[in-house]
Image 1 (cartoon, each protein chain N blue to C red):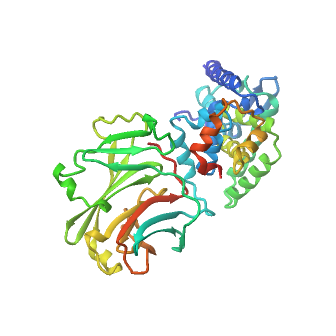
Image 2: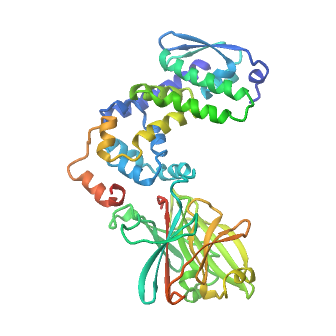
Length: 299
Length: 163
């Protein structure tokens, strides 16, 4: 039994090594693909992994494996104290488009002017389908586009869609998964927040039943408590501008011009920053759910 | 898990035989740091000699050295053990040449030494970290095998990663 177990492992190791030697001519060729994969998911950021993908064909094939992004995300969750999380906000204030960067750790706000941020998933919600685009793929590539059927109970009625005000729906990424939130007034005192995740990253079938998009959080937010912090709260002034890229149960909420980090489990909120501008209000605040460190997409 | 052999006999000695015939006599508690050995011991409780035809003596010795250190440190219940282990791990991988590093990594993987695989893959990843593509190729002695234009295309698509 023992001998047999060893033989199986030996056989496996042999075949892996043979496969590796065919493609690469370096001393690292001895390393089987599986171990090279283990090495690359331990890189500190996505930029490093992308650079690895242009080293040689073999390395590229490893970073392009379907399970790469998911396993990479598992490893990047370890905190990196030197690189604080940053949120990027852009909007039209005082008739000018401007961008603010919020540092999550100390609430300091800085202007972002120079290099553009790395791309993140872009997506939009249609009546029954969620359409997403993977910015790491070529725009014309059919595989870059995916649509998912929304859960049955996502919208109460098709005709209600036009009543939706855009800030009440938010698309973004958390732990590398496509995430969607929905805001509704339950009654005059309570805001109802639902958060959905695209759970199955592989084998996505647009017409799959049930929908691959699963409700992960549903919570009532006491508007009175929220209003105590912000001067006044109305439906139009509340939105979820971004999801925490790492902590699954945290979101960022905007009450008027105050940005809070909100914990869905403890229902506690911490003010992160005030998104101020000269006139004190944003006419058309467009918030980009861009986050640092950049999270790769799995869509 | 149902076997009691690992819990009751802490001083049992195992013989591990490498591919080149070199044998090591190690305490069971040390050898079972390796998942593969642990499985064998649990399955075949009676056998004391384990042949490992895929690892040569040099690398098996190094793997066992690591196991010994970690098994010893873990038996002490001192608070600073994690720190000691970390410091010792750092020393362990510091001066390894690439060839040794790769063979050790494969030996650790073959023997299912999960923590050691973690340590060694981290070490290799640290050699990639922060390097430009050309520097990575130089470090790992890899020649680009992309067709003309292919590499430029990848770079163009992901220009933000190459700044």
